[in-house]
Image (cartoon, rainbow, N blue to C red; front, top):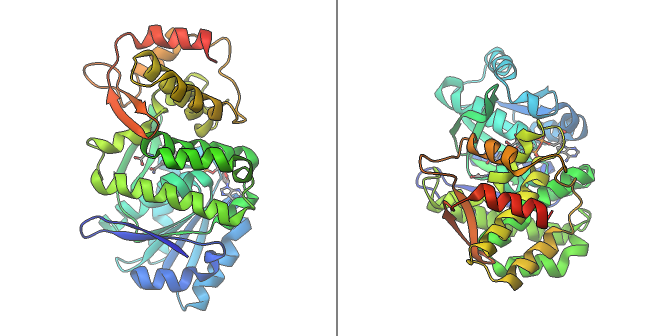
Length: 362
Ligand code: NAD
Ligand code: GLY
């Protein structure tokens, strides 16, 4: 069992990482928050794969547990689904001593976490993430929320879980495409924070493509959690450093919205965004050309749909400008001074650079 601690004053928690740990959830959750009852929120796909196993694990530890599955997919991060969840939490008699468990990917984690943050003004919750993206990113750091019809993740709050329990063996049932979408967030950590981790990813690349390589995957997930926990500890509410976790997301979000969330998985859009951010870093003479080449060589190995030929720089730039992360002064980018060295900049002429990148590098 690997443990990473998220150290936050009065609301720190452990991330426990081990293949097979799903079956130990009862004992672990009892130790983390000793709930009077527990309500599992999952989605239909994950619920049918792992729901009974988790319910059994809780029952064996004497925890009264029930489970509710929302439809799989981004559309479940909605007011309608959230309202229905509140009704179920009330009808199930959840008290301030109860606990919510999020069993699923980032959609379930964000939704269940926001339900827990707001029900009875906030009750305890635990994360049991089942996608690679959720294990390396969304389950750590306490961001919760739902979408609004005018934009993604616009309604939400910070509400740290009491425990994150990760069983990397559940990744073997994930669709390949989902797995690779998560891998781009993995590479992100090397790029923004750790050259040695990036070099490790380069050297183990073949093995890392197969989630059945339990030892390797456990190691990889652990390093990502360590990096994210450290960033969150230094800047929980994203007033500075935590922004580097959005590396590649400026263009990534624009690609997602310009294609109406129909073409790219989030991680695939971020992959293109990271390639552009690395290219922009080189063009602005922050990043040496050989470092840029090393980055682009690894990122080009990902299976992902290309940026469609019909999408021009002006259209993408408009989408970037309307993204919620814009500032009063201009578009903020996370750039690199080297592999593992991210910083924030508002570059001149981003639209021109984008057009050039689309012509030369895609
Ligand atoms: P997701 O939750 O939609 O899961 C992807 C698909 O995989 C779903 O169809 C799900 O049913 C299926 N699935 C999940 N686990 C499985 C398993 N083990 N085996 C088989 N199928 C499985 O998508 P995601 O990529 O995990 O999360 C995306 C969401 O995360 C977005 O809404 C994004 O905004 C959010 N997010 C949040 C944070 C944060 O810090 N809170 C960070 C990044 C992303
Ligand atoms: N995924 C970005 C963050 O957690 O801050």
